[in-house]
Amino acid sequence: MNEPEKTPSVPLRNWHRDLIDSLRDETFVGVVLGHYTGSEPALRKIRIRRVIIRGSQMLGFTYRYQTRDVVKNADVETAIEQILQFLSKDFQTATLTTTSQEITFERHQNGRETIRRIAQAHPPMPTTHDKAKPRLLTTDGKNYLHDLGITTTDGIVLKSAEDKYRQINRYVELLAPMIPDDMRTFVDMGCGKGYLTFALYDYLTNVRHLKADVTGVERRHELVTAANRTATASGFLDLRFVEGCIEDVDPHGIDALIALHACDTATDDAIAKGIVAGAQLIVVAPCCHQQIRREIETHHPGKTNDLIIKHGILMERQAELITDAMRALIMELHGYRTRVFEFIAGTHTPKNLMIAGTKDPHFTPDPDRIRHTLGQAKAQYGITLHYLETALNQAHQRVPSVR
Image 1: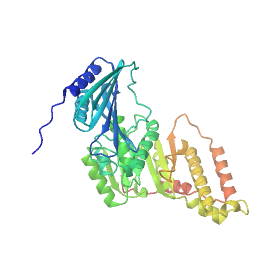
Image 2 (image 1 turned 45 degrees about the vertical axis):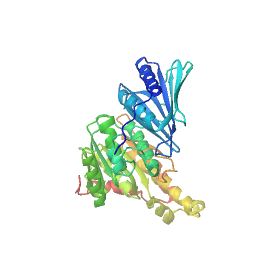
Image 3 (image 1 turned 120 degrees about the vertical axis):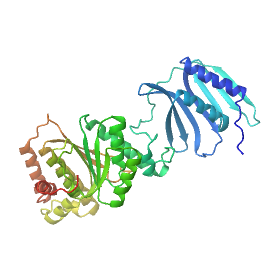
Image 4 (image 1 turned 30 degrees about the vertical axis):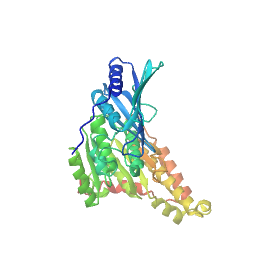
């Protein structure tokens, strides 16, 4: 039989009334709930402050765990009730800070409850984000994050998935300024389980409120089936996953082409698809740079590269740099303003380079200069042909079977 819910004590009711009055009178600065005795051993305290989200006043709860913070927001009425429930059960102290005083409620070990008031002036807290970097994607109500093994059912990021969650938000932050409002059709090639594909769709539709059509292409049947099931359960009507390879994709009508961690020359196949499609945006995170390394090892001219070839790890890194630098140049040759930058710190993933090319009507490449630079690079490193050049020649001839 469940125990009847306890009626809040007089001191707690008085403190709670002070909280309500401070919010009504616009003197509220913040609340700290402490001395936690509940069932989550890693939870230390909760800090609460006023926030403005999409023009609406809310209260933001920052749950301070031993190794991480979790932020949740609630409307003011719900938050007031939640604070009372916390103090009735799991937290033994609460300090309400207003612009003129601090009011502390405390439940002592002997069960006695007291209120202490200290007159002290405090400036109002800003209602924008604090020092913690805001995330474009939150975990609130995101079932797909739970299905993908990133959060618990109540939206808390799992410790084992913190790097993946950070990577997802970094990905969206990087892409956000490259996506104009008129971009509609996005294809993510070799999307795997779809972590970043789901995040992109979530951002486009729920943050930017765009009418976006997003397709994830993946060759493994079981991953495609699982991703489509999650998309349907999440109500993501214009997100779909299809079974296939990069070579199978019909590039016609693609506004943005994305290929992250496509192995070796698969990255070049993806870039070629985007160029042939005239995509407004091409984004790749290359992986496994073997083609140029084989070219250098086979054709290097004399002693020029002996110092590097002597050490395998240096040879590998050199081949990566040359491969991606030439990719960027070839994209520029075809009218793309290209940037090469770090995707996410190497402590989170060793494959951390991203190449992004945007079709800019104000960008006019110098084809003679680019071809001369490419020629010099080939001569210096003994390269006969970059595979991307071959892929571009073949891209127009490919018969599509997936769209």
